[in-house]
Length: 307
Length: 320
Image (cartoon, rainbow over all chains, first blue to last red; front, side, top):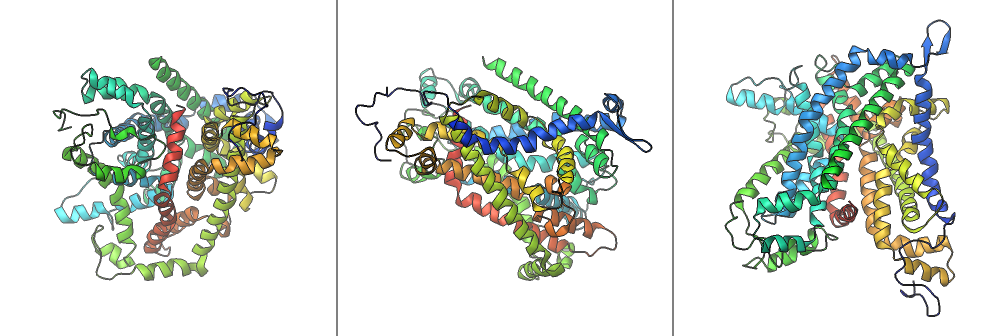
């Protein structure tokens, strides 16, 4: 740590890119530990999952190879399709609302027109630190009529609000919990991306007489496209994986939330309540493929508009 | 919004001129000294502040409800309004009951959580630092492949892995032990990505060369040259892996059967299920107080370490 410059006499161009000049195995010494654990908890389970999905446990005769039969069965499985429909509906409504609010707040914070900007930023982010379990229990209690806010409103105004935990509304209620948990996190992603836009761009817009709306649409949004695409992809993956909130809310809304409420809940129930590990693996793989395809399409579309 | 008529909006000395490396906290003093009529500072808008305030109420009111409800007895919960205190202030009583209920199982869950966070999040951060450093500063065979595989695997739904991981661990006799929770927590692709970006920016290659010429080995170069420079990124990754581990629900749910190994999240869930069951012990006040106790450490950490994690995130978005 003694000097910033290489000692004189060492012939090294100062403008070298930050890379070692020769390929060597030294780097593996550093990435090795990550790679080993990664292979163990990511790659091995994926391979094992594919293997499992090709077999079937019979009551008589034990486990036998069945090729793609599990996949055929899953594609004709109404429970699977209705759960997929449910999370797709969730995705189409909840994700745009959440990301829209997050973006508006990020733009408001970035505009410099707010009083108490730092206070807003940290308070809106705080729910991210709250575990899904606590968030769901908390909202679940508030939804309840016994000692929740819904009950309070009902008695204070002498009205009967629709029960947020009824079969019709429970999906929206779950959407609200998820929005509450992640709106601040997404806001922060957008805000961080907005902060690194070079000021020269704003100055140029200023000279051209561009208004705020124009600056947002012509400079800010294109500049954070990458962050928007990534947030969208993560939200899609999150929606398709929906499990925690319905699972934790179920004791409060046993009639509204079934054990095949989401694809993930369905695979979980198949595996841990029904012991159908092989079939469950096939359903999980199909779900994983669907998620990857959609995430990939969003990425392609999102990035193409930019170029 | 109401100030679009203002002649100066985002002009020559915009407030956002700070490097992006240091979130808001650093420019707060500046903000005070320059409040009056600095050309270039956009006019503050009451309307915009109120609108943002509504979103803030949405995120904060449930937490207020939680704090208020934690001060109530079981009867108080049922008989008083959710957003105001009941006449008997039972917070301390609730806390002591939470810690002592069922022979202090909550304390056991807290210690379990600390164990999982210490080894899981701590280990994940260490592996991410080492790996990020390797990706940023070394050229090694298979580097591109490592990167492609890690990024690709992130898109695989974590829960699709859960069942096969459970079966694998079950065969190895790891289920229902702390290792079943700790080992999968050790990998944080997001942490690896963040450290990679951070190390690229933070460590001048010349410095590493200098250390080598001075005779330092690779390990010494890493610990004495690289590690100190990576400190802000390390705090960020540690904080986010801590949240992920502390808040983990699905992994322990499938891996653990023995309540003695539960983390806090699973424990609270089991208390809630018990209270909802007909004939079960009604302990909603303990569920609520336990929930509050579970989130306090993380919220405190985020508030106290603001400066570090916000700069770390800002660095992460440079690469977008």
